[in-house]
Length: 366
Ligand SMILES: NC(=O)c1ccc[n+]([C@@H]2O[C@H](COP(=O)([O-])OP(=O)(O)OC[C@H]3O[C@@H](n4cnc5c(N)ncnc54)[C@H](O)[C@@H]3O)[C@@H](O)[C@H]2O)c1
Ligand SMILES: [Zn+2]
Image (cartoon, rainbow, N blue to C red):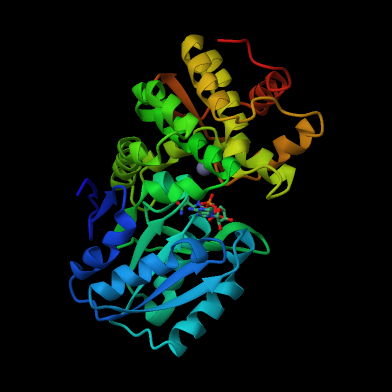
């Protein structure tokens, strides 16, 4: 099986990236030490009808007794209320300390089910079975779990690493085009900060010709995320901050648009363009590399121009309230060169304003 190891101080795990990995769920679970037969698959109302049957059949064939918990599809399910309902349901279903959960779905299900696994009976193991591009290249790896609160996104949660991850590229075939494309904003981000050669192999992925052929690309992204997480498991050394490339202004744009109006990856596409422009001016990045990255974003129909409905002052205020600003200093990830990212601390609000102004017009054609 093609696996990518995630090497952590305590318990590492393997990410299996393979066409048909969904059907291997039973054998992956059977290889886990000390788990009982009872388990529960947590999924959402879109993913359940597509893949729940296969997931439970794979588990049952390996001798497990899977129950299922289905939450409504959508970001609103990442809530303390929904997590509480899941815990009650798990107790009713007899999920005990020897049981494990399976998170079957996109990042919403992964974050929610991971959080429920962290708190149910003070923590039980869980397996991630990511079914979106975002989840396969990003959220299923790294152990950040959590929910949103009335005060903001991802404000309650826990570090709780999965015991295994099974990413099946064939599940991506049913993703709507917008959800598919937005995931590639994170792929292109990974390319920019760690693996620029990855940009050359994206044309087939943009064409969506053969989901099975995505496996090596997905595995490469998992390896990048895994290496960064291994270097900074709990976000204390600063390495993990490099994953925020494009995210300082991207998050501000996403929030200002109103969550759900611009998808995360669409907002990050704009944030990446701003970060590249600042990297050219403040860190000496070759503009030819920026043009390559922008062409890659455009190939996935990701936006590159900030509409007039966005007010620059409001965006800057949002960015100022962002957790990436530490003690009044702007921490902003820049590129010195392709694949060489660092956290700059000397950017001013005027720099960010200039980058936003740049986003108002279409970029020069490559
Ligand atoms: N934990 C982390 O490190 C991390 C990293 C990035 C993002 N996230 C979180 O992930 C969430 C976003 O994840 P997402 O983009 O996967 O969204 P999502 O889970 O909402 O999935 C997007 C949509 O696609 C549907 N769907 C999922 N798989 C499908 C499939 N194979 N076929 C058809 N439809 C399918 C879902 O039901 C949903 O409607 C956010 O809450 C974000 O905060 C977490
Ligand atoms: Zn992101």
